[in-house]
Length: 329
Image: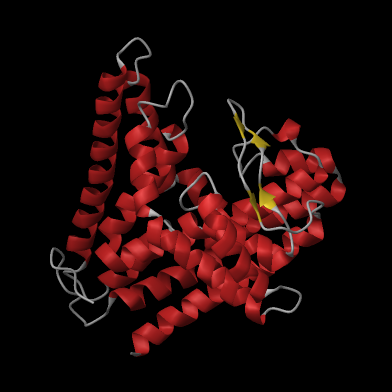
């Protein structure tokens, strides 16, 4: 695979090889706490850039049109800046035969397969101790009000997070890496970070974050559906999960989700586990009256979280396997 605006690898390496190595690094190492105590994580740097512009440009006294323009400019500056820095790094690395290894290491920092697994597993362990511990743990990975969640609500929130973030924390970065190399991956993470910080329809962000939300929807359009298919495929072969129900729920329910993308992996996971996910939920600033994904039970628990993680691992393995097949072809 060749990207016209980037030099080729001097030793004949390919994007698929670099992506597979990046995935392996992420699975083995994740996000080492010792490292990111010393240096900031790239996503943390993106978050600081978003906060910097949001504080200065999101003037509540300005007109809606002005806030939309400045929000769109923020998206352009941060996404283009991330892509430009990544392009400069890659251009330099590809002058050396060993540069692809460093590129794989850089790409691994923008993947969240190991980190997401560990966070969701932590919610299951905390929920074993009690609802309050589960609330504290799930508050680290979801934006909803933890006080509004009972034990089953904590479990469902963790499972939804595993499904949705499999799409935008793993599949989407990998997809954009294959489309546009490390610059494409960096631009995607910038857009996704912008959406997570300002893409809410709250009074403060409805105008300023509009461009971020819409661009994130577009960037995740294909990856979210790939993630849903991978979850359904995994459920087909994993004991105790239902591939048939995963496919049925995804086709039936995903188009009814308020997000054009999140419903695909969430509905597939709900059908796979025999649960009902999404539905009405309480965030800090708003109550969301969403459609239910899946037609199963609501009383999820910590064993269900662990079942979801098995499906999550299976979907990741199938995705990695398909990437390897592409390399062989």
